[in-house]
Image (cartoon, rainbow, N blue to C red; front, side, top):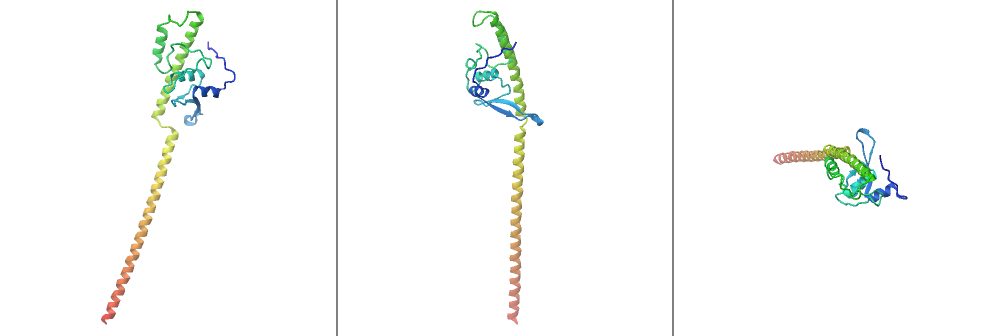
Length: 204
């Protein structure tokens, strides 16, 4: 049975995210798929596809850059001794939670047992989601993002265009130099002819 958390009066979703240190971040889907709504931690720059308050609180408690427990402030009772999400594998967490069921923080009663079962189920679900997100992030590292590929393609086209333009200017200059050399050669030939004609006139 899912436990509903009472909402704090006057606290909007944006204010809650800001208090937890998150900002909304949209991600373009593949092959025309709609954008995926995610949250990004402003401290470690990691994305969270699961944007529930429970999940964001767990990340804030286990963030490698900035840790803070806001469970009580946001109306979620903190569970003593609960491992940080993502710090251990699913099998290790479940084994540690089931191996010592007779050492609760206070007297054992029915509500505490139900809360323990609910917490174990929540941890199992969150760890499954973490495993899925790790696989997604690895796939993104293997293949470049479409936007990055497009940017590289544009840079390549720009570089090739600049190269061809520079090459065209170079050949134009070479052509001008060749024309100047041809003109100089013709003038030198004409000068030589005039000198020959002058010498003939003097000899006569």
